[in-house]
Image 1: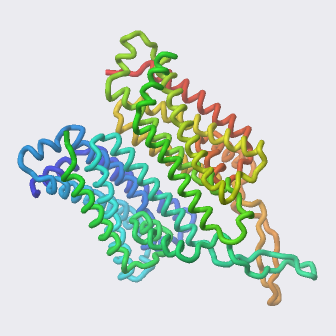
Image 2: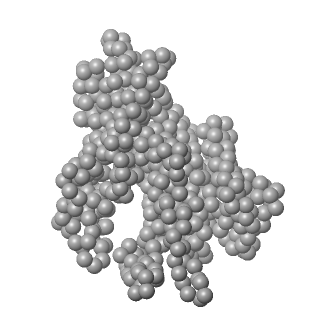
Image 3: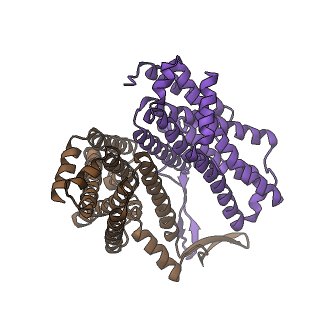
Length: 274
Length: 273
């Protein structure tokens, strides 16, 4: 497996799409930060939060890079060569998982580096306790690894490169938009208050009324759990600065990683490679 | 061109990905609409089915773009495109047939989405808006689809690598959704806002100008950007808020014609290797 990893990383360093995605992840995070800074210069006082706000962009670039990287193994027929020279299917699966996860963490680090250096040069401060900041970094890294595991399942079980790319990207959009929709639904207040005319002609606040858009009961519990467990939900929570249960999130990501890898590795063992 | 289009349709009828997408779009939409309807609290007569059924309009366009790119990309990956030229077909004819096929794919998925949205009829009844307005909304959903399909077809025909075309088309569709959403939100800012101020310990309200309100030439540019964006009308549809359908139709028609002419000209000069 060490030789497979070496070969994968040697290929990764020479893959143009990986470098393009890496540079875009770096540039977009920096551009977003500078755009926020131009409107709100005081954002450098909360650099920790700014650093955590680019996770979803990294997921998008990771999905493109991972899908193209994994699809090449099938389109070039390399996967069969690996089997022919004696590597097991499990080794191939895990080496691809490690490579994809590593590329995700590298992109995440690249997106942080540009913002951190620029922010510090502008006299920025972390703006949160160091422990909390490292906790958020851990959540981001674990979520990136978990989402890489999901991409790896798609990349290892589908033989057509273009289909891998399409399904990975569509899944990413669905995960991203779904997480944002769930987050906005959960953020709706339980009661809403409007304005009404008072008897003396002034405008006063009306009595609070139950908000029909408020999600309650079992549906709220399910939506909260889904948003906490899915890596995309974790990234959206980090981006919005309202993390629900930070201490459990790395564990949820490990759960997603274990479940996706178990399903993917078992299915890949039985896959007909033609 | 008619023969190439017929051949494309023949291939489409046998395409598993196309049928799977149509069926899944209808089923997933039906499931989402049913969950939405079942989770309504209080008096269901206050709710309109169209607000649940139309909420997924932009996402359906992404599904359509994905299927179009996979279908058209096969022509390049199987080298069929050169065979079509060798037997005497014109490049303009091939391109037009591909654009029309893309539109058929997009419209089929759009129709499946609209049908899936009817799953809430037993709970909420049919759409509450007037028939003419409902028809306009349905037409507008197809107008946006036609516009995006022509853009996707351009990418599918001009980029020879199927995976590269898939990345290009899907990222573009996503960027268009994000752009349409941002522009639509900015245009939705109210001109005047009400601020609560404490005067002598008493809360009073005053109406002030919204500093974020876009006006003048900048507003016209924003409106134009929304009308020519193939997903602009989809974002408005998902909020059941079509303000200027005539401008949306004109914008979509302009994009469709312009992109198709541009694509045909570029495809005529393309080296097919």
